[in-house]
Amino acid sequence: MTGVRPFLRQTIADRDALRIALERDLAALAAGVADEHARARLLGRVGEAYRMLGDPDRAAPYLSEALLAARHLGDEPGVAANLIRLATALQHGGEHPRAESLFREALAFSGRPDCATYKDFALQHLGKCLVETGRIDEAIGCFEEALAARLAKGDAALVASTEEALAAARALAGPPPEPGPPA
Image 1 (cartoon, rainbow, N blue to C red):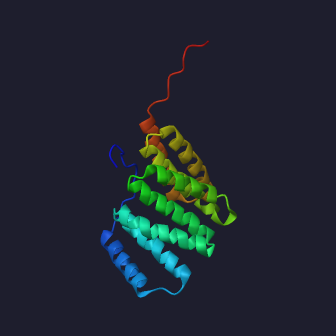
Image 2 (cartoon, one colour):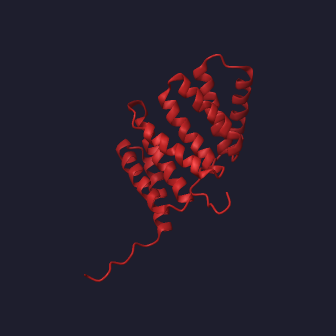
């Protein structure tokens, strides 16, 4: 990740509890899970736990498998969620072009009726990825669109998160240019 500065990455308050949950889920996977939907959810949780614990390289295979399982099962919301999860892990691992592609796929997927709830998440995370690659103006557009969607949802925590991202991106962009003299 040389030259890329992480932008507003999630922090975990109780890493020990997350590690315990990860070990429990890994044990369940190792024991075998007959229900394909339950297995897909476990794969997603394991991948997310590894990512949140700062190990995106271990997260990616689990999230890739969770995404494949969701596609196989026709679980459109699961596909949308796992696209965002996998893209975030790739982003954290420094694979920004691949991450951006998956975020954009998740954004396109969020146009489906069962997946609309993921649009603001796809926009927010795409914006963070764009900031990390220096595309601040594009990121601001994503954050503005995510903010509108989150205001419509009425979730104060999500609104606050996007307002923070938008303010930070605007600060990175610097002040707007001064208007020139009249022509």
